Length: 185
Image (cartoon, rainbow, N blue to C red; front, side):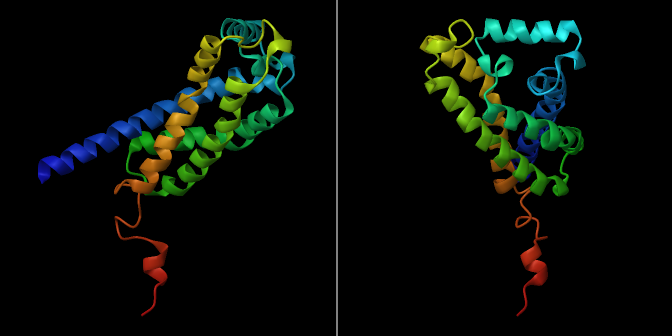
């Protein structure tokens, strides 16, 4: 029993470290790459603008250089809503077992997972023949670009299931639910 409990704690701790790394790494990506799609170019040094150009050409990602309006709305949400959450979540998962992060993590993960569905659908199914050179033309190029975006779906879904199913974060498991406090007999 003790060994099983220890193994479960180690799995949760590993997931917490993955989540912390995800949120820490997302801060510079959002600030230095993603927000270039909605902020004026003069906000960024030439080296960062060149990095975005290189990435977009190398991986045939037209959404960052010539973003559709719906994609810009996702980036605005990322900058205004998600970016302030990243250091808070990183702190909570580095520290570990912070039960208070559960609800914000559920909100974050469902929001991000929901936005990745149209992004991945656009990558895989959009007729990009008019955007030659800037967008994926072959299935191999489409799958490569989808693989770059996939962790931003996979990690939030993993985070969501961890928050919902883990005895470490599920309040029903540690006996501190709102329903238990308000239930009258």
